Amino acid sequence: MVKKTAVPKKTAVKAPAKKAALKVVIDYPAAQEVVHPGHYAIRLTAAGATQAQVRFDGDEWSDCRDSFGHFWYDWAPQSGRVRLEARARTGKGRWSAVASLDAVIKPHEVCLVA
Image 1 (cartoon, rainbow, N blue to C red):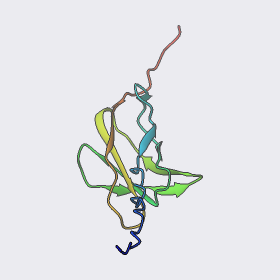
Image 2: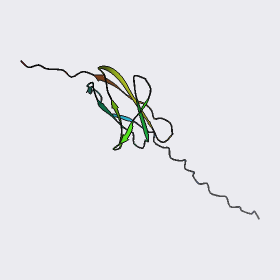
Image 3: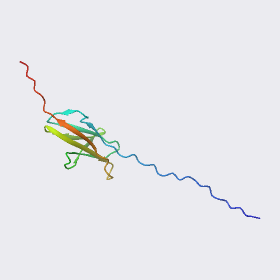
């Protein structure tokens, strides 16, 4: 007589769910928006992020402030063109992919009426 042994059933092992990559979006200035010299508040959205930074033309990164569910950076642009880049992260984790935007800063046009 052959003795049967119970074979344990194989159960599927679920891999841990991958976290969605953190994404930062430059809300303002919007694409194609003309920015004027003086004060401008840059607004970023990065859902779930605890820190965001911006930089201009590849210079040093500057921290943004977190307020009302967005990240903000107070900027004093000068006339010309600038490459704006933004990134974000959660805690001390890795930085997100960089979002970028080319901004054009033009002075206000003065129109004289005679």
